[in-house]
Amino acid sequence: MAIEEGKVPPAFTLKDQNGDKVALRDLKGKLVVVYFYPKDDTPGCTKQACGFRDEWSALKKLGVVVLGVSPDDAESHTAFIKKYKLPFTLLSDPNKTVMEKYGAWGEKMMYGKKTVGVIRSTVLIGADGKVIKHWKRVTRAADHPAKVLEVIRAL
Image (cartoon, rainbow, N blue to C red; front, side):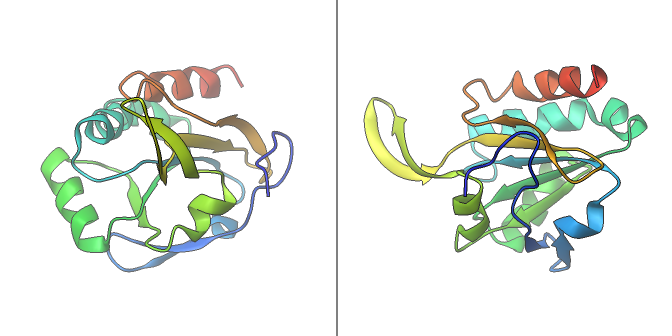
């Protein structure tokens, strides 16, 4: 299923860093940023997570929920959150089921070679539960959170 702007994205329920279930349907009525990233505590992923952390006060004032999704387990997420003081929820998708539904798992180029893995991407979901914007391939992880905030502020 392709993610289309103006359409309802696939429903999901994943466990967070505390082992609690987080369901997208429970967030209806809020702006939700779901960003997919390859691995906790790696250079690009850390820059992106810290970017969302650094924009957190503005995002929080706007009522935005940020969910980071990777294949990492709860223990890895907990350590990542603690190390970088991340104020938002990280979800585990070890079987890549949600990533596949969102187009965030598949073939990609890495260092000039084709490989299969997590495709860094982001979906902005409106309070009505529909996709506002889908960044299919995020190329500059460090700059991306500010761009997401810019789009949200323009709403």
